[in-house]
Image (cartoon, rainbow, N blue to C red; front, side, top):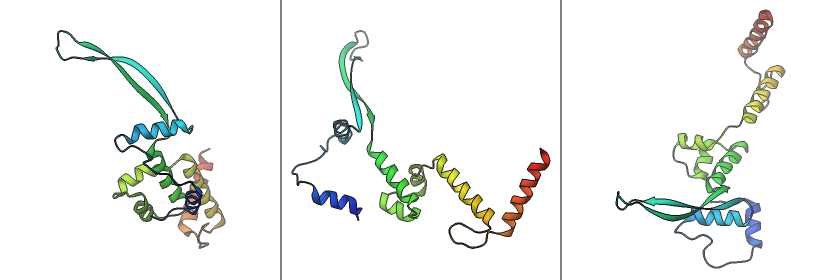
Length: 160
């Protein structure tokens, strides 16, 4: 998998290390610890009790400790990478190959469309329609599209 040049230069400048970065037994916990250590998340220790019912007549109360995590998760990186690829103009098919998605439906769940993306797209369409050209190719916009827009705008003004 080709890496971005910025990452390659960072890796070349880094001090070589030995051993594993994450313990293979529980990636989630190790990831949370690493993110909390560098300020990308927080872990709050929660102490409580849970009931263990080995015998229905006498439930036992057992001390239970866990951590509540709030911060960056591994899948955030995948989601951001897909969003960045699509915004950079990479086709869906190529982005799917890079991200390892096998189906379009799952890929589209990761490719989140923000309200700003929709607004930007509509402004681009509007400016292309007004100018009579598309913003990207420079070719003429369909005459039907311009006529429909004119008809729609005149209906709106008549109803007011």
